[in-house]
Length: 186
Length: 186
DNA sequence: CTCAAAATAGAGTGTATACTCAAATTCCAA
DNA sequence: TTGGAATTTGAGTATACACTCTATTTTGAG
Image (cartoon, rainbow over all chains, first blue to last red):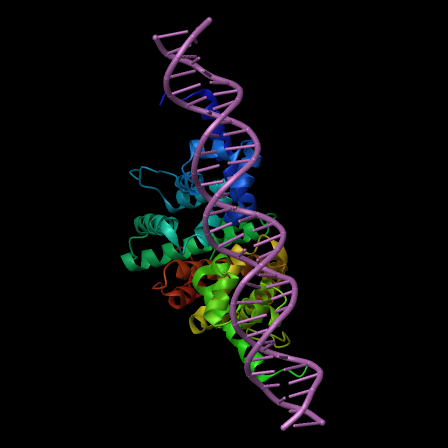
């Protein structure tokens, strides 16, 4: 092994280029040529560091999945408010990574190993939200907590998607409003 | 002109094949070869009927967009309940078309003319939901109605996306629960 | 029945893609 | 300083894509 600094820097540039492209033009637009052009590297150098294009994409996506999680270890019990704020600050604080997360969650969710990874991650998140909801409202059954968790997550995802559609959309404001206020007046 | 019956039937087969593929494998997987194979047709026949591949895709997508609309003409004022039920029956009643709608809305929303079409459609839908909400709750300002409309639509989209992720997900049940009940207990 | 128009087949074009490879260059520990 | 390993190059390969073209077959109105 005994890697050189040059190679390590090149690898970082390639990962950065891949993340930027995934956020800007999505999975399809992120071609090998586009990655190499942006990283200032030739195809041969890319394949000296990565076995395949999907390798670089997966590295970025796994980082994005990890970034959405406030407590990756999962040992600290978190409140619903904490979880929601974590998601909001993820979207607003790391918009590049968030765009990647959303784009891949959707375009890559129905096929391949990437989709399975996304599915498992989604179920873990639902369980996490459901546990927080149950902890804060002991009157709810497990099923009811899970239903509410799914609805909260759906709303957050939907709002994030609107932000993807229109970057001027005030995601954070809407997200807080959605979680704190009832959906319809009574 | 004076079209023959054979050509009309072939055109219908091509549209059907395109819709099926868009729902099954998404926009990327819907290649010309895949369309032609499924429709039982050669490339030359396809291009005798369609100027471009995107033409066939657009036909399907525009049908999907129209299918989600309860009153396409837009003259009849609709209630929020009507709008939500229309969306639910769209997703559950025409799952193929709904899958296409969701996949394209997301994967194709950030680039090309298809994305512009989707964006305009989205804004029209927000306005429609906002009008219904304002009509049913005169205490709300226009801005508040629009905010609620965006949240309702985000929740519906998010739940539909969950159904895309897992076809066993009970979309209709969750959607009604989400719109009728407050998100969090007070 | 006729025949011009419509429809079809199927080989072919050009382009973009992911990926390879041998040779040249750069790095860095000893 | 030096030499083997890491890195980089840049031309090259194979494949898949959307789309074209010409010859042939099929259709159906008059």
